[in-house]
Length: 318
Image 1 (spheres, rainbow, N blue to C red):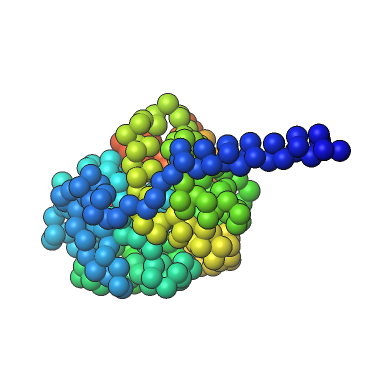
Image 2 (cartoon, helix red, strand yellow):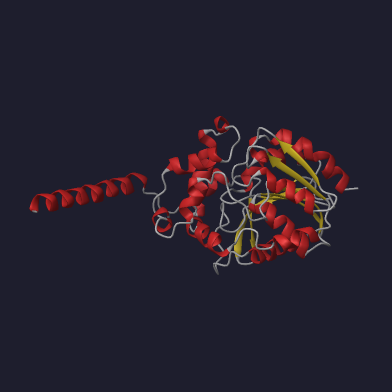
């Protein structure tokens, strides 16, 4: 009897030792904004106080533009996901983008409230802080959900919207990034707040691209380092716990805001069928599908996606 017990005890000690080694190799404590700012917030970045948060923001283009374009990123992304669009628009249009609370350099909501309604109030407060009365909203994934929710809450302020692989309906993901899966696991998510294998981030980013070969080490660096911003890893499971996909889907047909829908045909997180449903339920909306792109088509191919949206953006400004 002693031999099997010794064997099991040895296996347990080995497992503990391997776990300890794994934790040591992937140990990744939080980083402060000051540690990250030099690389990820050079000019034209600025920090603006809104609703008790020091919001990382970029506000570019002509200030006399009466209808700024506001870009809203998705879960675990940042304002940098819109670099290509901002570069293509800022010569002629005022372009505003920022890190949403819980992501990028802005950091978490102090009260831990990650309900959609709280985010919508935050967006309105930020526009007030900038003195912007009317906008075109462009949102990807979670940012797309915030776009249409804001359009419903403030129809007088949202003149038009572009929804890019937007959330809003209940759906079954064909493939979910491993980082999202871990954040939804109560036993594992606390561990990930102290450790973070870079491979988890790389796998997650590659998962949402139609062509994973486009995912460069520099792109992975950005997602990895901004995930380490103090408070972001704790905020993600809170946000997932407080939001139920499709909770407000019955409100989508009430939208009267002119809407363009862009979708990646290779999106395995929010399937293209959801883009078709948005088109059916938003009266007068248009849908453009990019067969070879994934969940973040604006980042994967900014030139092509922006080109497809230009006509709509110009018409909305008339």
